[in-house]
Structures are given as structure tokens and as C-alpha cells.
Length: 219
Picture 1: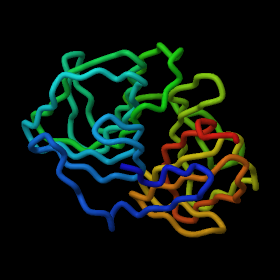
Picture 2: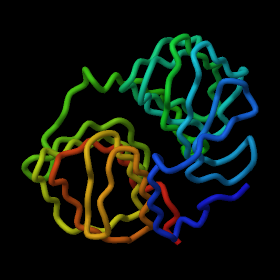
Picture 3: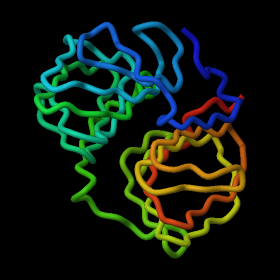
């Protein structure tokens, strides 16, 4: 399966308008945002677990990252309530399940094979840092080489400078409404901007976004 695999193209998707598609595992559904492959795929998705759903044991050859949006996700290593960011490095494995049900934003097979750091951050209790402009605060989550992942919080009425994205930029709107000169993106929007693309972002109402930069093709 190939879905939005050309990283030279800008993509904007309102997940509220997308259907949930059953996975091969009972009780686990997905909204596919990009995908290159079948069940083993480089992919970005929303994943929804019904209460008591359980996935089979599996290994992440090129790693995974996820942010728990709702509920409590679990595996043999711990419990991850809403707001928890997890990076499982290449070669890691686990057996995921949930007692309560949960929804995740998930990226698979995007990590550098040399990135061996496991990261677990409960973002509701983690520290925010002042950003580059007034009203902007940043919570770094993971960095490896040119790739950086962070939560960015915009106070109402915050405007950022026009800038280019070396290695591209990907945004998932966790809360509020994010905007730029191309459009308005409420909670649940997923955006992907290609290498050296440019925009001037702002938020009139305020928002929190998950941002990943530097991970898209530069040629």
C-alpha cells in the first residue's frame, strides 16, 4: 500500500473527516495518514484500541514513536496515560495492550538505525521552555542527528517569523487551532511540509502541536 509517500508534496488532512479502518487485530482500528508498505510499513497513523484490546508481540526494526492522545496505553514495560510520549528505538519489541481503551498518534519505521535511546516523557508533568518569540513555549521530546521532535504550545495571539524547513516539518494539532498563510487547522489536523518549504505560522486562539522536523528527504 502506498499513501502520501511522496515527501516532496505538502499534505494537510483533517482526521475528523477520515474513516477508522479495522486492523487485522480485533478491537484495534486505524486512520492511515501516510503508509509505504502493507502490515510492515513506514507509516503515520492514528490508532484506536478498544477496552481490553491486545496486540501480538512484535519488534520495531526501525523504531516507533507515539503520543497517547486519550486513555491509557500499556505494555510489559509500563503504563502510559494520555499525554505520554514514547520513543522505542530500532530493534526494540513489546506486547501492547490496554485495559481502558486508548487513542495514539503513531509513527513507524522513521528512526535512524543508530538511534538507540528509549524515551518516555509524561508531558503533563514535564517542563516547558521559552520559545523564540513571546507566547511560544517548547517541550523537547527527542533529538537524533538532524531530526527533532517536540511539543510546541502557542498562547492566543502568538505569531512566528517566516521560516524554511530544512529536512521538512510534520505537525499534528493536539489541541486548539494552528494557522498559517495556507489555512486554519483545528485539533486533529495532520500537516506535512517538504524540505525547504516555507510558511509563517500563528495561532489566534492558541494551540498545542506535536512537531517533527528534519526527517524528510532532502533530495
